[in-house]
Image (tube, rainbow, N blue to C red; front, side, top):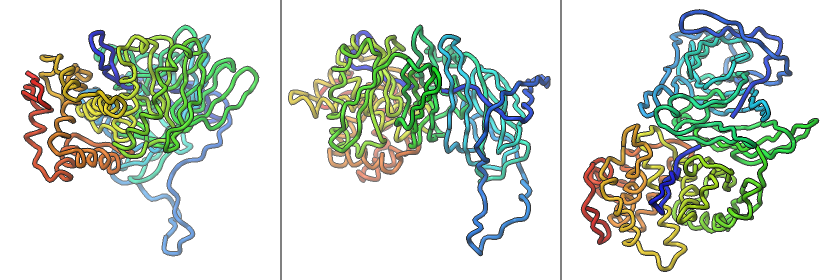
Length: 520
């Protein structure tokens, strides 16, 4: 994510759906408050074609016994209501891994009302008597687990779901939640982090963007990057509006005065990396990279002529970064631009999103390179905990320099280092585990980028870029930590690097010199 700062030509970046329909003929669940009181929820009649996701025995193999009845679930207990990441409070839950979110969303812009149904396919990592999800706002109409009604207990953003029968450890299970209402920011991000998050409704368009939290403002979710999943988006909106989302457009179907757009994102995706746009947008096919990655942009129709030239180098950037980082990890890439501003830009997976204020940035091509690089660093290899955010932002900041090196014959690394060194005292702070209030601190971006240049000078170009490519090969589609990166760097370089990383990312004091440039 890039956070705009008036004095900087380096832009610092930060990250970016759903609502209520159906339940069939079954009885709506009780919603249980913390004080023990219950209130009945209403249901809406719709067709239901999904079946439960429980794993079935392999009856084609003679060596597999088929039990006559379901086995007893012994030792079942509730999944933990938090993963214990202090940067995001109680957000994130344990006891299961989500495989896929299938979002059915119906957006009424005049009423600012989102109705939807979220289907969550997951695998239990323990025997579960109950499990938690996050959802900000909305009225819940129905909850089912494997086609049976479930009980819901709610405490602000936390939903505790108790299925009719416990779930066995290792079992696949399917949860369907129907809900409706007007999207709103969660108090944690709006109050404590101080930036808007998730679903935003403007005068004539809506969009999704937010970091470190976003998804729980418009659909039930395990809202933490440690639980990545694939996504399907089925978004219905008035037919005069254009809809875009992560991944590729699968189908588009019209009915009366609305159109339903279906997008599929098969690659694992952290929940804050979701984006959706609904409004007067123009979709522009910008060809393919040399390796065949399709590039498509989604731009507010009033801004196309002004902002489209800023993205002309995206295909060349993909080519340059593939040489350094390995193959582009997803099926498609592109950029989206909205009319307003949300304070920077965000690397939402396969479709980075920008505000119109990108036109005022000193070097907008640096921001474009930054968000593209996040597709490898942050999106393909994702954080396990937010304390490691430098693995996203430091790497994307250094990618700005790598693009300048590849595209500008007059580029000089000592000049680049000198430019960052002008921030002086702002760089005198921890890069790793910077603290919640400094999650997007300047040192995370700039000193993080300097750390990578220092590592490159220490181990040499061949080893350094082998580290970056192996990082994506080994951890792509999953999560990793600073310890993982340090261990990989030591493995491939054959060097003891503990003191190096202590000096660069775990100490407040900035090293005195880099590439012939005094830093302090």
